[in-house]
Length: 163
Image (cartoon, rainbow, N blue to C red; front, side, top):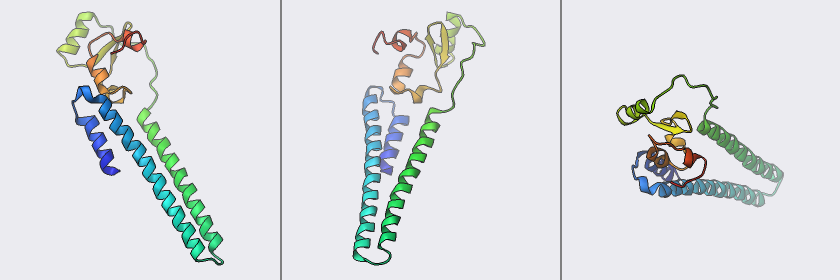
């Protein structure tokens, strides 16, 4: 599971294979579902081990062993839920409030900063957006954002066209 996660992360961050974005996303999804399946299997094995031990050692502690097995499973999944919620909060990052633009750019300044200055700007309606921090968080992959740097993305943003 660790190797699968490292491979998925490495491919996503290091690979410049623009045409294989779907492959990278599928590999990441495989890693996620493989991890959940592994966690479920380990909990099932632990719980069945508790049950076998309880059945073999019938006596005063049998109900205690069964209670410990149930508490173990419940506490593990509660901890897993807390960790997943923290991870999702970290991925989404803090909320960004909308603010009025601090400066106004002409078309020439925009093109110069993108093509000569290396800035990661796109145009949405009449706004110039800096997308350098959003490239790796875009749900469609970084190729979609990188392909549209320096362009007007309004038609894609509102769903009029497909890339």
